[in-house]
Image (cartoon, rainbow, N blue to C red; front, side, top):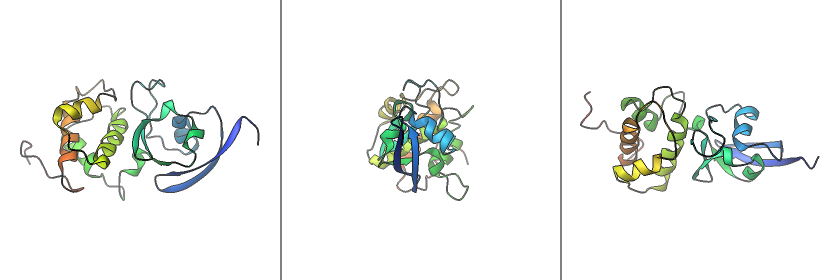
Length: 169
């Protein structure tokens, strides 16, 4: 093995992955180009836009700020882990219902951040949600639908999100 490459063993979306990677390859590039998980979007490559957010060992992390070798031994979840049997999960349904996406480029980052927030189990006010999602940039929606969708998802008692009263059926 060259000193420019390293073997890594990780869990990605519940599946074991072993790979030899260049030591300078970004985690986002590894997920997209080696594993074909193109839902991890790459925007600024400087940790500013949040499009590349993944869940690493339970925490929302911007994968463009990590090297693939830093994933060794970790559990990684990408946006591809959310849908079940090709059906939208309750968070994705909330985004659809609240019109929280337009072009969709930022959506995976928001979805992974919101998933991490739900996993943390904290109850957040609308203002706290607004602060949490500020780490992912969106140029299309104005954030209101995103904040409302995340709020619906976080306030649901189960994975089944009830339709809010202010939305007509």
